[in-house]
Length: 213
Image 1: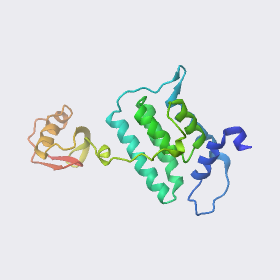
Image 2: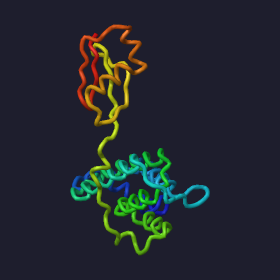
Image 3: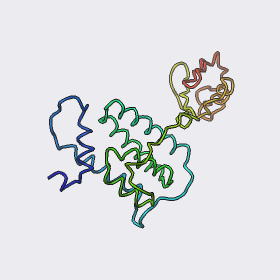
Image 4: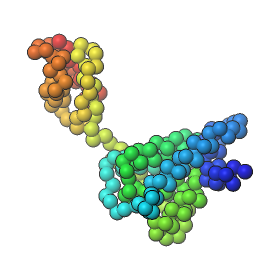
């Protein structure tokens, strides 16, 4: 009945989503709609009102980060039989790629491969639609690359006397002295400095800036 209404891929994903494989769990169909909506959102990455929307656009840094974070997570989950934690990871990745309006073939191709053990029917169909040869189940698993997971920007909370007043985005490799200058010269800083000279500025690289007045 569930396959007739939602499709086999929805049932497969939902069974894995229920909890750890080795534990018993009560059967509850209340969450099936959510998994089904996820597959519809996943489909919308590939097809829009005008048909196939996949292009040869170069992947952005954020798209690569989303994909490779997923490849790493799902690869580890499969090795550990933790399929239930992979499903939320898929949902997060698809949400990020949807927000980024991703159309890049390299991203969407590898996304298909990673989802294929969980939802083989929809992924194999889309695999053929992309013009790929053979079945997706015979395709090599994509290797994640750690360099795509390195943060290029850091969001610093800037505190005045221990209270966070604003945040500032800065390059992750910016020296402490430059971070201090950027924080103090930010437009929002003037309101809290009130013309005073800070007694001390504490910079914890990659974490926080605290200005003591």
